[in-house]
Length: 137
Image (cartoon, rainbow, N blue to C red):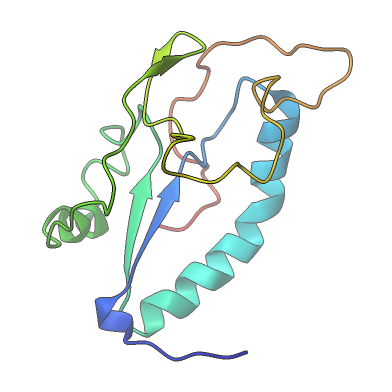
């Protein structure tokens, strides 16, 4: 059902839509999402929502670093999470991994790092250098 809410009280965080991913299928999926993401984000901007671009590890890369939208997002009020975020290490990375004690299961099986490529596995590295260039800031 449709719902209405105040756009000026809404923030959307876009995470890890990188220009390249270590998994080649993930890189392809991000590219396929770009047109829908841009349409959604454009609609949200029109109602005054704050869009926070958060591509891990590259938020200080141009053009994101110096963009006026980044300054606006950084100036937004801080709201604490309702539960403490996990900071445990998994797959060699310290991160905010889902905490099975406070969060439900993910909608996908990520036991293989979320890579569905054949033959397996893709290389596990960090080839991203920026947000996907097709995603509008």
